[in-house]
Amino acid sequence: MNKINSYRINFLIISVFLIFFVLINLSLGSVNIPFKSVIQTLTGSNTPKESWQYIILDYRLPKAITAILVGAGLSISGLLMQTLFRNPLAGPFVLGISSGASLGVALLVLGISVFSGSMVGIAFSNFGISIAASIGSLLVLSAVMVVARKVKNTMSILIIGLMFGSFTAAIISVLAYFSPAEKLQQYVFWTFGSLGNLGWSEISILTIISLLCIGLLATIIKPLNSLLLGENYAISLGVNIKKTRNTTLIITGILTGVITAFSGPIAFIGLAVPHLTKLIIKTSNHRILLPAVAIIGAIIMLISDTIAQLPTSEYTLPINAVTSLFGAPIVIWLLIRKRSLS
Image 1 (tube, rainbow, N blue to C red):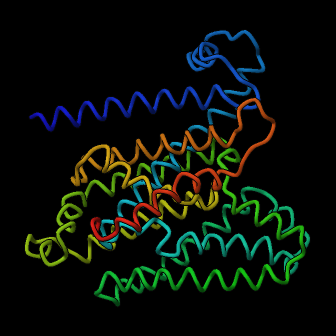
Image 2 (image 1 turned 45 degrees about the vertical axis):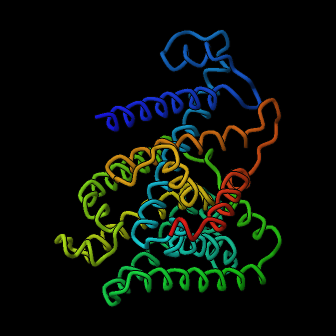
Image 3 (image 1 turned 180 degrees about the vertical axis):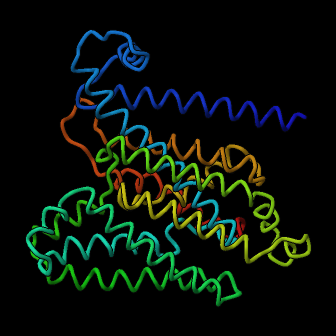
């Protein structure tokens, strides 16, 4: 009973932190807006300046919601990969899904010279880039699922996923070598990641897909807990390993692919947040860990975005740079303590 109360207190605390950092994210930026005005805008009251209302509702609120969805989705995906492969250094991108999305964008942006003039406008639109990234990630996910049906060893899937990533990276390098500087710069800007390019229609799509994945995730919580002690133990409990593995790969692939398509490849969140959550919540039960990871992932993403906005400055840092500054020290710490975490 004490443990249950402890978990409830922890959830209450991190939920309050989530609300607090949402308000911080909406308040700070090139134009600093008082907390009171932010709350007035969100509740539909009149604000002292009409421009503040426009900034909050049309720019910062969609970006904050995107940060929450991206942080939660990548963190959940990272936890699933670490559980499935029983590897503390596994992340949501180990399957090569992100590399597939990057290849799709590279083929569109860096290979634009092979398209007709009518395709140029599409390539330079967020919609075109999102479609290219989605197709690329879907193709790699399909390839991984085909391999998963042929291979019984889960670790082999991990290695094959890494090989897919290396293969797509090689193709991108060739395209980059022969591309003009302008197109190469556009592709590099996409790889920096961005939370501010999504409209309400894209956010709706991302929300619906995330909710569907969470609903599918609810069906494999018990098998995931069993996998913590190894596949043989899970089999002795009657867990269908193949079904659990395929469901986990599908959820991770869809979440990672869609997030990468809309926001670009966001580094380290999926790798670092699950471990940070375990330090805070102190449990390995996925029924508790999964929602906690989602909330803390959203908080970390909001903090990273707030830092990236460089409050009171007109400049904005690449979101990938900020998340890497947060994630790299944690990864180094994990490498040092790898024996105790394995």
